[in-house]
Image 1: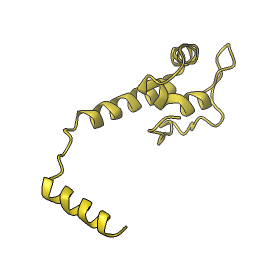
Image 2 (image 1 turned 135 degrees about the horizontal axis):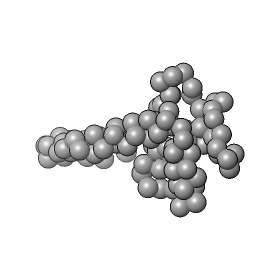
Image 3 (image 1 turned 90 degrees about the vertical axis):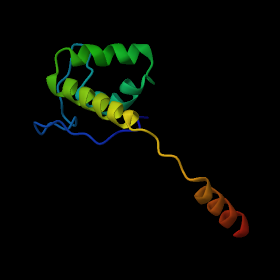
Length: 98
């Protein structure tokens, strides 16, 4: 399941009740799977259902856009490198504690 589940619709709708589309798909499903959708870790049939739902549900659309933007921002942060001296010190301490 998704790695980024921290969301509520801003209008108070948290996906617990939610709207339903013609296939019976509702906001709860979008909430459960928004992260997987953004990460591209979702089977195509489920992604298609979510995309149909997003076509008429602005709050869910905003949720998925927010997840995508957040993930994009996190991925854009340069990775910090651990100094070799710190790495060596940690490895030395973990080996000596065994």
